[in-house]
Amino acid sequence: MTAPILELDDLSVDYGRVRVLDRLSLTIRPGEVVGVVGESGSGKTTLAKAVLRAVEVAAGSRLVVDGRDVTRLRGRGLRAWRRGGAVQYVFQDPLRSLDPGIRVADSIVEGLRIAGVPAADAARRRSAALEAVGLDEELIARLPAGLSGGQRQRAAIARALVVEPRLLLLDEPVSALDAASRDRVVQALIALRDARGADLAMLVISHDIGSLAAMSDRLIVLDHGRIVEDGPTRRVISRPEHPYTGLLIDSVPLIHAPRANRPSPVPVRS
Ligand SMILES: Nc1ncnc2c1ncn2[C@@H]1O[C@H](COP(=O)(O)OP(=O)(O)OP(=O)(O)O)[C@@H](O)[C@H]1O
Ligand SMILES: [Mg+2]
Image (cartoon, rainbow, N blue to C red; front, side, top):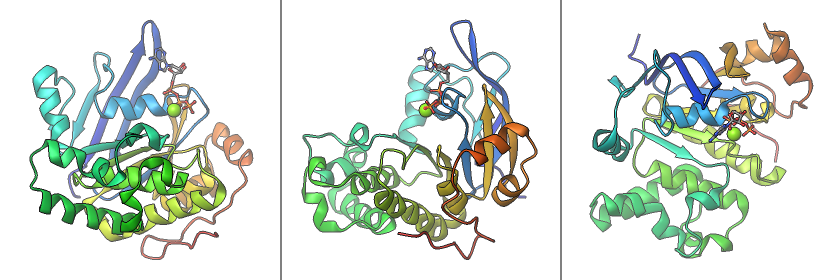
């Protein structure tokens, strides 16, 4: 067994006196793509923020990223770990990742520039990231407003990829998009998964079980801050073990068939 890229043990998060995540345990292996579903308010975004150590975790929690226990990192140590870039987060709204006043080309390499990466090297990494998300080089001379929603989201993903993370957290990457743009982004994520293999794991939060069925190896279901289901995507969709999961699946039309196995992704209708 390879060492996990992410290990959560008894992870809890409290907002004031309200427990929002309740003793979650979750292991993600290198290259695994894990979908997270759950009703609004079930704690999905809080889970992503906890993995980034952007919210305080409660006593008794343990959070290990790529072999490093980051549960108690604070201040300078926490900032240094974040700069290391092992974990990257892509917001639901790509306009939060892309500065509206800056050309997309510059936004994508901003993190590299700050880290002192030479311009030629940064440009090379940007080209690779653009190719990985299927975005035309010519588009990035524009400001974000000149791109479609799906193109912006793919630019935001490219921005996360240039720092070469081992784990990408995507918070509702397609929910703000129309159907055609959504399919382009799903296709880009499937291509990325297949190209990077064990080098890149993803935690993909979505209301859209259809999109997750097309791209994730595993599905976890959150309900009121607890994991009520965790299993292979096909099994969870075809034979949910928790009654709540059955309800969630029934309430969402399945657009994409679950893929049979990793090397042969199911084409997404466009
Ligand atoms: N900063 C905060 N302070 C207090 N409570 C918060 C804060 N952020 C989130 N919450 C509460 O924590 C719970 C989980 O929120 P979270 O944003 O993680 O849910 P979610 O599953 O991402 O929902 P959605 O699908 O609507 O994005 C909700 O009850 C929410 O109201
Ligand atoms: Mg959320």
